[in-house]
Image 1 (cartoon, one colour):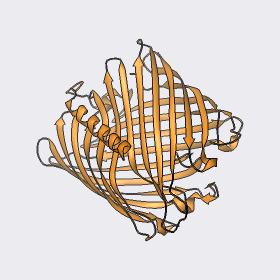
Image 2 (cartoon, helix red, strand yellow):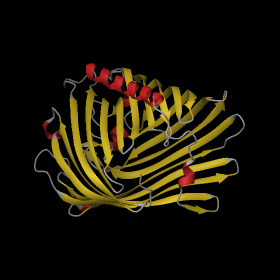
Image 3 (cartoon, rainbow, N blue to C red):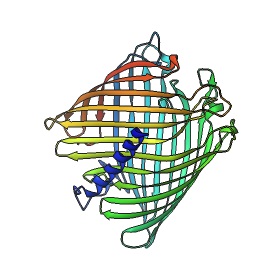
Image 4 (cartoon, rainbow, N blue to C red):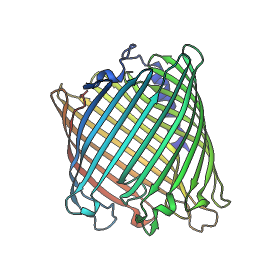
Length: 405
């Protein structure tokens, strides 16, 4: 598979370049130092986001007779930090309202909340983290219905300091994913196909190559158990290596490449063994910011006879600062959904392809306000005729509260 080989090579090369790249600042300030407000031991930055105030030319992602509507997304966000003796709490909360002028059935609210508590000791750092998400939006590139989904999860772990720059980390976690009982897509009840519980156990070695760069080797065991469709149950292992970069490094983010063994518990559902990759990286050089997103892994499908697919997602964006106030952005992305059919299916396996491109411009008003206008085109092509569509999304955005960069 030459495309996949190039994808994995690009991800690995990006990680190696990151190691070789010089750091922007060796003594990086703690993130809480940038908080706008302090109330006792709490430091926080409130943000107001107004996004995509404009036109969606294909609200329902339809192949024929697409529907257009005026849409908007807005709501508050807060990032917060707190010290409790030795302990340190870091969290973020986001509340959004999705507005559609004509198709009011698509209106909804959603929230995402994450928090992490750690207690640095002499040679040990125990920690716990949790997430609660409740939203009614599309969960990926496959399902076009805006479905209500609740995700509740948490992890507990321990960092053991083995030396000045090396840590051993163990993590155990669980999550439960639930869809609303009345949400369907092309006749399939999403709750019956996708509701599941997931448990993970991971062991990793983390070594600080520089003050801003960490090399990681991780092994993970995962179990997925479906509530209504046990024929989709699966176990698996994942082994990966990569690098993690702090926000103040010249290159920030995280990139990994590795191997996954995805073993289904049903005799008719095929297994997967092969490479996986994940990257979310940003590179800043003077007035230019280059961002790369890569994902290649198994993803569950709502289809009865094709219970999962291999998702390959590659996206690149470039933002150029023209003046102290103006910037322009261009972006392009391509996704491939390679479906795997059960052994009793007579239908051939197929691949859906999604292409996206767009761009925009932004204007900064002072230190904490950014105005932007963006337009994006999305096109999906599938052997299943009614699953193909095209659509434009154009709108303005306003961000208030977060320090503009």
